Image (cartoon, rainbow over all chains, first blue to last red; front, top):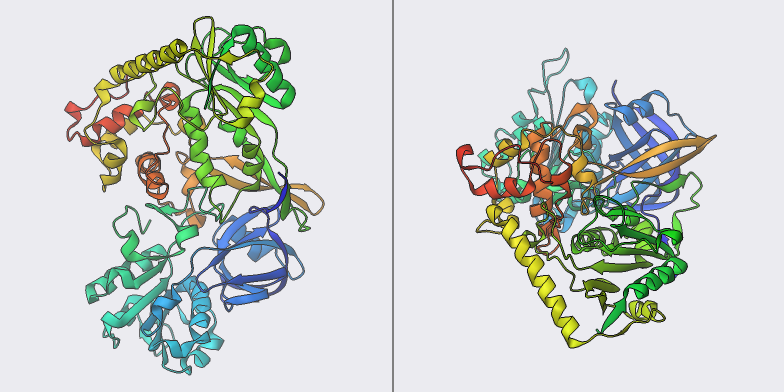
Length: 276
Length: 360
């Protein structure tokens, strides 16, 4: 026997095209891939920084098939520090993927989808939002709720106006603490879940942000009467292979890399340490 | 499949044939102490002694080396690999190691979405010779995890030591071919009946030495039902020093990590190494977040993986084969059998002692 097999550990070549600062700690990196990558909303990739390591990110660009890819990254560890400090246009990187199930977009069709994001959690949410916009008339309504520490900590602010103008789409923002000149809502993102004007039984929620935010968003949604099986959380776990093999990203029986990274809360709610 | 009788000289001939055919690894009991896994030597064949039970080391290093290069980049050169199966034989492994290979197979060979080409290369060309355990090591407990001290299938040849020679069960056509020229002859019914006696004797010994750990429910059921951190994990896990020995010597622990090295200039290589879920860094994320920060959480995670998560994904099979090597090698004297037995016990007074008496 001798046959050609795909090397599942090999990162395909890519180059950095542009680095766009979003906030003081978040940058969007634009990549040109040596071959097209096809990903669905919610799927993620493993980004290789040569010699430094690999880290998982959900792209922030529009789902589909393209050689262009954007990833919006918060500096928070070894790989991301290097990306922020050293990586510049023209530098080589590698991409593996896409991995994961992505959002069950078919399940959302005909229903309201509420998008709840906090901090850099807006980055993967952006791909989800673009995914929803691709067939916006399939959904009853898209309601976006974003929170950040301050007005300076929102990514993609230039796009907010356009998002709010899409058919049956609304966008609400909040910041953690009062800020000079800010006239909008103040408080963590859960305050945007007060006085909800959506049909709770008919709404699916997708959410991404730090563990602590996911925890309190989930608790609030459950309090409001949301079905745990209507809540999809973008879970955070350390990953290595991305292939459902190395067994470090699991929550209970599920692999975040293979079955997620956006997990149905109903599926994982009985496992220990769901929120870290 | 037919049964053959092989003389002691015939066994040597078989080893020579295997050594000529490909890379031969064996579990050899000729040295003092316990059977050891090693690369076979042609001039060691005369002295080779078939083990009576599993070796000190698991055979997983033959199918997944502790460290291997899986990519060199950039260049898109190796993204598709020509897979040429390596001709390798492992000789004299027990059922617990064969079951360990099956644990790896489900993850690396049978997952058609993500086939591992490196594993395929090592596995497809693998020739397996198993043994019946004619003795039982004090830490063996395969009988408690769907195992037996002998193999029913999955081997090319299986050997049972009988009077003046060996009873050989032929498992595959490749096995039958390999046996040609070794002087093997058709086994008599009385020899086949003798094998059954040896098997029953080993099974009885296993059941007897593990009677003190017996539970009404299976280990898979017991662990799967646990929701919160049970007392048994705290009681027995308290002496864990997070050395990672248990995962290294486990024939079914396959967790690994990837890391990259600089070669020279703009060339880099990606390495795949064994890892251990018992080490704090295993699940530590950027920003120092760690869902399994405490030893007890990692301890529970290991049991969950073996008796809950893996069986949930792979048709009820645990990823523990009952070889007992983790018991032999634990510096903290943790006995997996005692830990599992005490899952259904609600007070420390009624639990088995921790650390467990060291098995010899």
